[in-house]
Image (cartoon, rainbow, N blue to C red; front, side):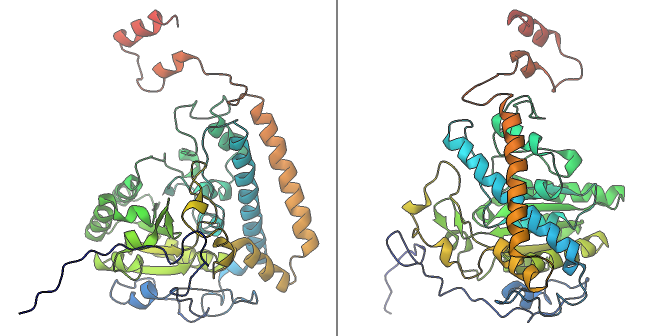
Length: 412
């Protein structure tokens, strides 16, 4: 018997710095091919949706196929609002990135290129529903009309920050806006979302939960624990997987392993799953609406893989040019979500280049004005620290004697 030599596989990206971007292995199906499944679809029947990709917009910006037919996501007002949400998010990203580069804040993560996912999904939720996000889902807050001053104040950790400096930058928290406190430990929010959904089912309040995770963090134990628990107890939860191709400098092949898609992993736990073009605002809106209706109807969990690309660096501490071709983002085959929705609206005659330029200018002025006002309350360049007494607040309803003494010893 001949025994082969043992060897290890070390997955790598298709291209490195200096090379030509290569997306030839990515299969991009034609839009409008997959039907709208019944709300009560099970994991086995969801196989073509987990292996394929739901798309609505074609290359000319037209909405085609069954997901486009009769969907409220095609309402002109909804589409225009979606474009405005994404434009606002993109300008905020750039302004806060610039502020970090100027030394006014310590850290920032952009969601550039992924705006359609959070913006379209959030617009399908109802008050009381709860997102359990990662640090790259600030678009959920933007589409929820979260106050911009509060979002920026948390980045600067000044007195505009509702958390009063208790959280790390970009790790927002707002129960009133359905945004659960972000944790720096990746994956934890997945099991928390399932637990919250289980509580909703027991209380019969009609609310649902939405968990969020990146492709890299699907390698964590929490991802699998959440899927198993959701499969067993069937709570009202949508389990979102944002596959943006990169986990910091590690390509998606590391976390994916031999799996063709991340959606297929959910099917392995008995959870129906769909895979969606995450740069197609209409596809995201249509599938989100379908998933929310299914989940709120008591039909159990569903998983959605949003297929997209992380255009910007992982964070302000990262240089993507060190591990991928400099022009790779521009070559992404699914395009830019803002430009695709813009082309669709212009094609329908409900938007124009002039309106687009005017709205961009209005949003820019609004955001810059708010940013300047917030920065007057303190930045890293001009700090206005919170009182040290704040560390004793917000934990106990009645401060214990030993902590009261410590505060007094500090002079507060």
